[in-house]
Length: 292
Image 1 (cartoon, rainbow, N blue to C red):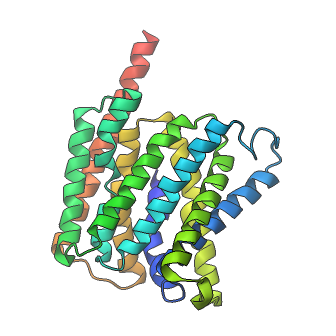
Image 2 (tube, rainbow, N blue to C red; image 1 turned 60 degrees about the vertical axis):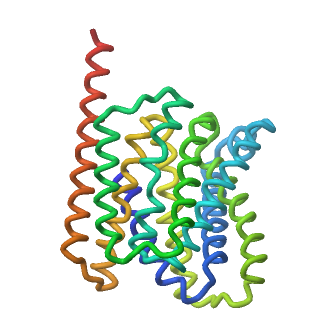
């Protein structure tokens, strides 16, 4: 999860670098499509059996993959990128990573994952810390879009359990290709044809790094954890993404951190340590019960 958090936290810097060369929705669509192609090529090079991994079986499975693509890619990416146009970066990062709070009740209802009190309290405290980070910049008109992105991410996390039998690389490849194709249609309708994209060496480099290192790799790790661990405890780690994004902004873009932002970041880290410690302690207790 630390690798996932660092990779996703780097997205903010990469998106900032690439936004000058492409419109928001087309940039988001290209990120999804390139990610899907990279995962598909990786899947083919892995030499796995094509009848099992490349093409998942059954109309029901493909229907779920389609819903996952629309929610986790088309909706989440489109809303996340669009929210930056009317919302301060810090506030957009906070609201689009509200999944830890949104997932608690659905995970309990769908998968009987009753959250521990420590997890709920830790997620709430952590989100409060992020509000301190974003509050000075104001919310703006993109708040609804940022929250919509969080809804898409939450739905994707819940659907991950329904598709536990599908190979991770195949699931990722088709999810991003289908979601990216749908997002391309939206981009064409809203922004017109992609004739204004500047295919400079900088933009191509940013797009490849964003797709491979900040999307494809963390995706495989993220969905792998969602399949085997508590949804509440796993998604709690996403609260750290904006904190890492702020750290990258300071180190690379030369941005400054106010005392309130520093306090908010410290609260988030403390809350995540609380959740992580509680999760590890509960795991040890389960092992002792199984051994006895």
